[in-house]
Amino acid sequence: MPSTDLIFLHAPTVYDFRERPTLWGPTSDLVPSEPIFDMYPVGFSTMAAYLEKAGIRTRIANLAASMVRSERFDPERFIARSNASVFGVDLHWLPHAHGSLAIAELVRTYHPQAPVIFGGYSSSYFHDELVRYPQVDYVLRGDSTEEPLRQLMEHLLAAPNPRYGDPQVLDSIPNLTWQDAAGGVHVNPQSYVPPTLDHLEMDYRQMVRSVVRSADFLNHVPFDHWMDYPVMAALTVRGCKHNCAYCGGSAYASRLISERDAPAYRSPERLAEDLFRMHEISRGPAFILGDIRQAGMDHARRFLRAIKGYPGQAMLEIFKPMSRSFAEELADALPNFVIEFSPESHDPVVRRAIHKDFSNAEIEETIEICLDVGCRRFDLFFMTGLPKQTKQSVLDGVDYCEGLLNRFDDGRFIPFVGPLAPFVDPGSLFYEKPDAYGYDIRYRTLEEHRQALLAPTWKHILNYETRWMSRDDIAAVTYEAGRRLNALKARFGLAEPEVAAETENRIDRAVSLMARIDELMERCTPEELEQELQALKPEIDQANTSTVCEKSELDLPFDIWAFNWPRLFKMGVADVWSGLKETVSGQR
Image 1 (spheres, rainbow, N blue to C red):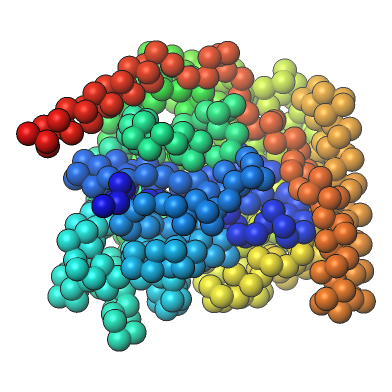
Image 2 (image 1 turned 135 degrees about the horizontal axis):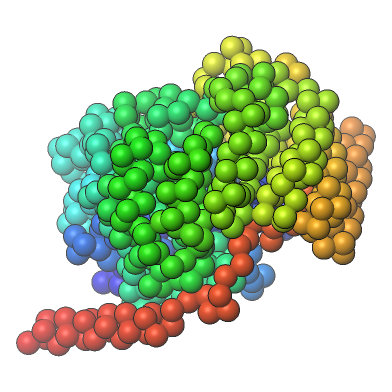
């Protein structure tokens, strides 16, 4: 009998990334994960907790992080030895199009009778194409699949032939796309769209219990260096009321992919409880996903009242400028707060083109207000590859950052720049209405994106160009903007001289490698190109991490003790004791 009912598997972007010479460039510089995106989605935690509450045993296996951590880790051997009734694979972010399908193929090879379930935004968008791959049995659509997954799991665990199940029962499960034994594809109504998030357990203690049960801590970590930087994510909302044109989670995309007409919010009081529970485990910062003002100011103020006294650091996203009165309330409730703001461009014309209609004066006032009331750090993010954005516009944005650094020069204001890469999100306005935004979308199917991920550089992987910049232009100006911003950070003391010098060297190497690879692609046959790229692999690998900025710039300092070890030990002992009691009770 399998020891686990469902194993959640998180794959790398490209399955054989350790052998493949790919210049990933700055595609992941502004997120905690590595270029192969080894951070699994928050939904793994909510689904696992929801299923466990229903008596379904789960386990998380972050194969991507394990592959980054150790060259000796063999994902094929891990899958072959995994003892589970059902396997779940996320295809949430489209960059996992290659790795997720390769992992599913291994599951099919070693566990031919075990069902394989896919889920996530990209799975939902490409569900009809995805379910036709021979290694995929079921696709759950939408942003809230906890309850449909429970229904599907309870049926599969009882079915004599779980690969296919009972068609009458499968037809009744909402949000499910499935293929019957004759190869017919069924698309059930996407009728499960919960209006709130209060039915979810945002409790990371479940992960602790799963770790104890499986005796496998490292495969559960959210991303490779999480042990050194144990940031925890708190989910405030699914869906969005904003319509940022590049975003696959926008209001437009949520209606298209998840059939969500309005966002589903976590109640302020439950959100505060989530953070306090997380602090029982981790002393790292808490990242509050989604602007807490989206549901209205009364909702935001209820959260601030509920969270007052929280002792840890809290990172908050904001989607628009902030008033002084609210900043003061925020500082009173969360004195160790950090702000993450993404206007994406200094140019109001570019911002209006992506539906961010606020002025530079409002941006600057927000920075000033937050720093005045005691914000520990204010991160500002700009992006390359936007509509109406030229190479000169991108570089002018760096000059704008210089002005901000002159004005806010106490080390708490930090600007960043990175590319819209590797893909424009399917479901976003850019992807669905490219002509209206000046985009040329190069790939339209899941298979085209899967194949694109095998290109030798991030520039060649990009699934778009704009009317104002080619892929060559986007890559070149991203490197140049990164170079100039790195020099500014060194000048203003935001980067140590040796760190800034190393970043400069990495950018130089990346630019040189890109030019060499371009030249090889022009003159070599496919076989010759593969040989030449393999010869360059050591240099490519060296240039792949922290290209346009040092990734550690994103991290916040925290206490020397990353975890509340006494609390974790107590929770682990309690779970072992509970398991022993269940075993003894079952033997009577």
